Image (cartoon, rainbow, N blue to C red; front, side, top):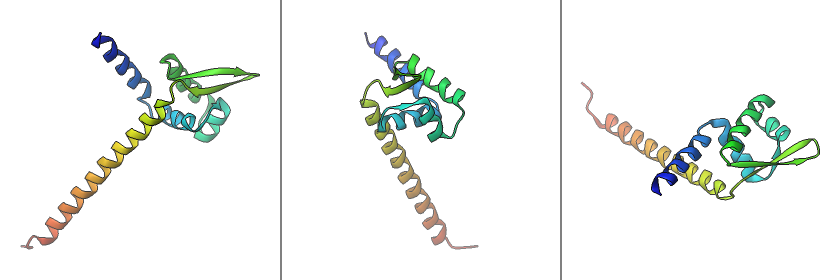
Length: 115
């Protein structure tokens, strides 16, 4: 049973393992969008956006509903927004740690006697 959940998690994180896919998910966490809106906001070609949406769809991270001639994309699970927020907090924590380390190193080199 644990093996199944581990495979699910690995596949899920593989689906997130691309900067454009993360940006798409961040956009969708703010509301549903069609491909043209996503393309415009990303400033990217439609084929690249469609390719990344296809990966997210195949992993059941997003889904699309046909609306006339366009498809409106949504997050499959609203908890994805929380996951992205936690990832940002982790990034910020690492950034704070790196800044603190640089400050310590800078202070140490400033207090060392020069030869």
